[in-house]
Image (cartoon, rainbow over all chains, first blue to last red; front, side, top):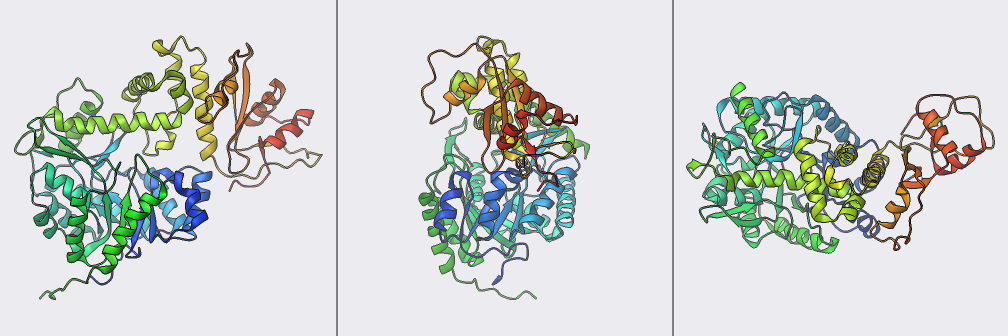
Length: 291
Length: 236
């Protein structure tokens, strides 16, 4: 655990999701941020300001490329044209980590622009593993897989979520992008114990952590229904869970994700600084060698 | 794998079709999932698509107001979900949709403003290329269009309307001219530029775009300075 999985060479510091409204501030003030992360699809145009800015920022900072469009859990074959675009982006920017989601988002030629849930059954396990094998072979490097935030599940199930994720990681050799907010959101929505959920994940393969804000609603029965909205500050409950995670993983690259209602740079920087203070002071966990 | 494909087909249809029932294979806390929980996905998808269109068409949104825009964009999105995960491509076809959208028919220029905004987004993301510099002489080689250059012709003064409805714009003139605009949108360097060009200049650009030879004329000097053409050599 003292070194992150080979799927991530990100520094074990605080990072921030890169947004166009902050490009100039970052280049002019060169803030002491551990790394930046971009959504891969936002940089799949041929040229223009996004590439000019990302090139300049990548010259200064480590980078994580986070895909949102591969549809790893889709029943359809992987979109090879999209995978080729991702591979070209990875070759161009040489990021310290590449990640994608345990979800589906494309069907019959339509892109549904959300991270949709999958049933945790054997045939889907094989499908997802096949897709991840293909991605890792096209990128010629291991990727990180992010645990989902979900609002419902399926009638059919051979595994629960952490079991399914652990099995995918074991079979494909990918690493885990542990979204601590997603753990809190999913466990609340499905009335699970987040600590039990965490204990059953392959935490030794974590290469990056995400923290984000969520919205609180109620379902029709009046039970809490948390929405992974990325539109506000990280909740105190998630900060507490994050400290618990760090006790299990040791220091980890930790990203503040914000995708809507983007605040001034200083607010994101202060959240990243809080994550960095927590992660650099975390102790390496004691591990008993197996066997 | 056909069971998963069937399940995702039903899920996808119900996402975009609010009148359809929640798919029967979904569950939450031990009971069949209801519209409250499935509705989170429905809402995420529609809000995401509408927001994406609002960011790509800010002037259209300003012209019709937020509420009208959301309704119009929502109707477009349901009928025309993205065909690619590369969302910066989303919005092709929105201008055509607006042209045939009856509630917007009183704003006859709206579709052309949408075409201008789409051209702006395409120019923003177009490949890099060195603009052709004016050297006073042109060799016999055909001129190569700059990859960002697009010409939008309208019988309405769309450039004036577009400029007057930027976030930091001056108040619009009290009376718009009756004349149409021919607008060149291009990106010679980092910034997208939109400017009015003459009929003759537009014809030169369109000729270059279709691969026909373009001959030296007075207009060319102007078009070089506007970044309509690319220097010979590969795109960056």
